Image (cartoon, rainbow, N blue to C red):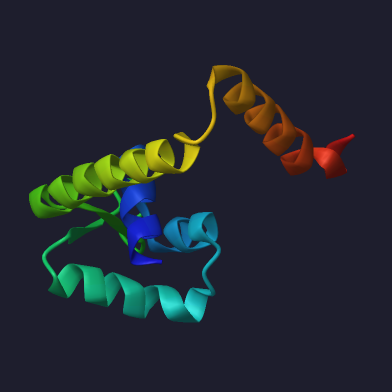
Length: 107
């Protein structure tokens, strides 16, 4: 969940704690603990929402942005290693089947 939160913040920038929890599918009661762990590790910064001072937003610290870059690199390497067994045509078929599976309930 920590890696997911880091990557969501990397992609979305500053968002509310509630939005972060919804985006990663985490129960609201557990989001606070996740944020506390990431913050204690120096990966997050907290700040008041510019439009609503009652809300607290979270964003990545410089250390968090470096961690996100590392996670992205490792994810890409893992994906490449996983797909390395396929030739180009097989990869195309694999992704077509994944898309079909992922969107099967939509149509």
